[in-house]
Amino acid sequence: MKLGQFLSGAAQAPTKAISFPVVGVNGQGVKSRATARAVFAFVDEHQRAEALRDAHAYLARLYVDKDGTPLQVPPRRRDEEETYQVLFRALRDADDPDQPFAETMLALRHALVDQVADQLARAYRKWVDEEFPDSITRDKFDELVAEAEGK
Figure 1 (cartoon, rainbow, N blue to C red):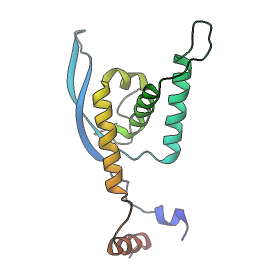
Figure 2: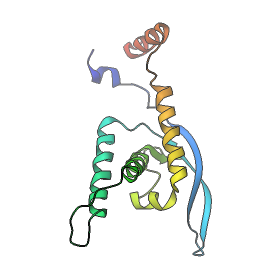
Figure 3: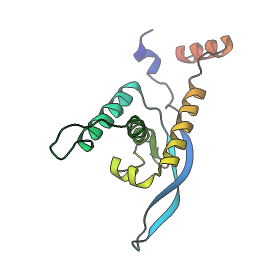
Figure 4: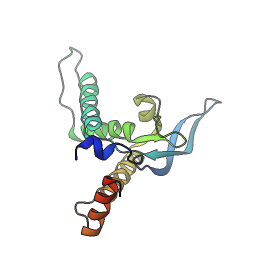
C-alpha cells in the first residue's frame, strides 16, 4: 500500500488538551497573569525544519553588533528560540485545533515565561513519545495494520 492509501479516510490526528499560565497586559493596561487553554497538535518533520530555520533566522537578525557583524549566539538562547518556534506550531486553539493558539510568534514570546515554555516543551515531547513509542507490541501492530486496511 502507498502512503496516500493509509492516510485516505484516516481519523484526524489526535490532540492533547492542556492549560498553562500566560502573562500579558489586560484591557486596563495592567500586567496580568491568566490560565490559558490550548491543545497540542503534532508538528511534522517539515514543520519542525521550518521552526528551526525560523529560529536561526530570527537569532541571526538579533545577534549582530552595531556594525552588522554577526555575533555568536549562546547555545542556551538558540535552544530557547527553537523551543518557542516548535511550540508556536504545536500549540493550537482549544476550540478550533485547525487554528494557531497565538496569532504571531511575537505574541507567544511575550505570553510565556521561560519556565512555562520549558514545561510545555517537555509535556509536548512526552505526549509525542506516548503517541509514537519506540516499540509497539505485536497485537498493537496487527491492530494498526487492520485499521489501515479498513478491516
